Image (cartoon, rainbow, N blue to C red; front, side, top):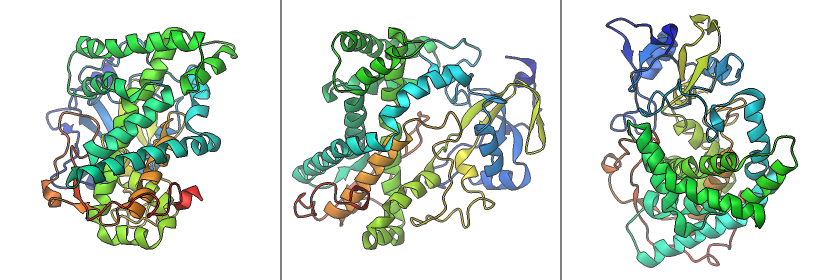
Length: 428
């Protein structure tokens, strides 16, 4: 590492504050608020040993996210938490998310139409609705209690992203296993590569097959779009695209889905607002993402000597952007620590901002929206089956949220009795 990044911070160097589910299951670590007010740009030591500037104010975090020329993504966005990550390692063919500028946009332009357009979301909605209804039917057949995270959210988001790419649900363990190692505390890159190898081999075969025989899936359309471009993707790059969709795509969405439901169940007055006024669901989705999103923070690296909020930052320095803390900034949001399902405006940073903002955010919104609409219609009696303090949270993973959400209910209404499929406010 370069001198500016590795320079010592002294014996009193602050440890990066990490989420504390026992104290604040829905918010950033309590000390983040004090840092935001007193020292919004402060030197910290991260769990991996990385030294970085922690940025907590909304305006400052948004500025850094929006300036990819001054603040690069090349190091990797989770190097402060993933011990196996090496920010000095050259960018590989499978790592387009570490690219900047035109090199990154080459990928984003081709992937975007499969994940972000209004037309594509309209096409995907019936599939997501069917998956949600099927899982609720399965829960009804098994009877309460159930784990909303493991029995509902993970199967729904797994089937959704797998169906999008073209990977059958039966083959889900390939990317589940890869994600478990990738986002764990694994310290060896060799271990990560070994865990990823079966998935990469599977995807390589799928890429070759789709090139020869296109199907009705995103991979086939991405290949066709690429072939019509000035610089078509290699097979290895296509494997990287598929892996980037599958590995983070199921559990990040499943976790925010489960964490979001837990948040609503812990705020019954806001859940009652949604029952009384389902048209608030799209706003509720945005509020859930603001309230919970970005808890671990993401990393950028200064490309030259610059400033953040008037504070000097040297070229090569790493910056940890505390997005959840920024989304609790009183300068940006009135009463920011209150869950408000009708909040407007809500220009949160939970999905990031700028050129590298989450390219799967529209599919995540769709999954959350359909899930909330359907739960309100079909399971109005849904409730926690244990006290909130007994809900376990994940350990050893950079995907922050509950490990289980035990729930119970009186009845799961049949689709027809609940008003049919896709009749919620966003589907009308």
